[in-house]
Length: 105
Image 1 (cartoon, rainbow, N blue to C red):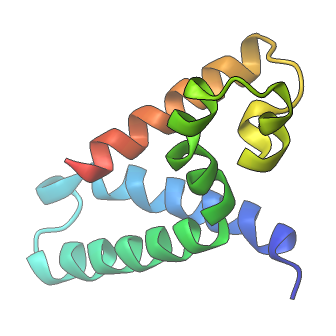
Image 2 (cartoon, rainbow, N blue to C red):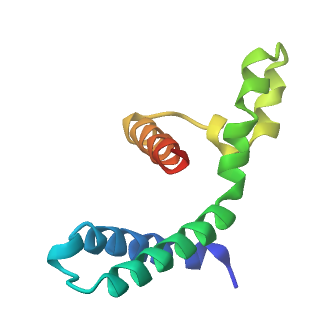
């Protein structure tokens, strides 16, 4: 199956689950429902990371690009360094990096 067809529904489902889980004890008097949805969200997050592993790999190799003197190195480090950065792309990259940092901590 093409991963591009899977990414958008996965992101929408993760967003929906995150919003529902923010309700906490108000929406879920029984903790078991909340815990099951949390585990489901964690599994979906793991699938999301696997599907987008190239983006994360390009972030991991950013230090090599910054210290490199060769201008052609940009092509080998992933899509994050290619193309024009407009306002939307900058905002999206900052948000994605912020979510990654929050997830790590």
